Length: 125
Image (cartoon, rainbow, N blue to C red; front, side, top):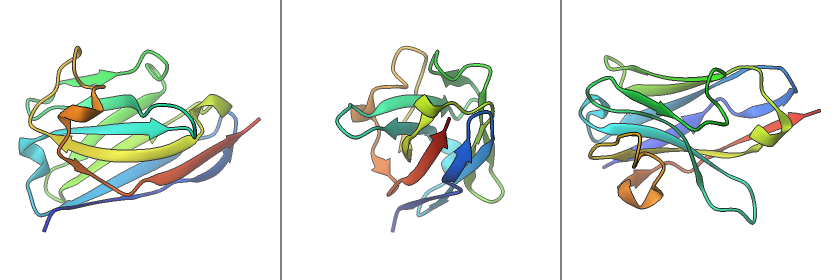
């Protein structure tokens, strides 16, 4: 049974940090593209970062230099380290898995087969 379970969300002040975790079961994350998306009510789901099976990473312009996606392949966990958080980073963050991803496609939510349930991140000013 495939499961992606996010954790690590919470409330922080502007400039703070959070680390999100995505625990994967039912498949090997290292052979998939793993990504983080976020969604604000009333807006489309936005691709934040991706990590492909070859080690390449992609980031949305809005988070470059502040967020880092990484993997622990032994534990089958994907992380999103978020630093210098801003109020506009507020949203529900989702972990997703797909066959592959590149800079031109990683933000297309329709390409991902598996999704977690999401974890709330709230950044106050």
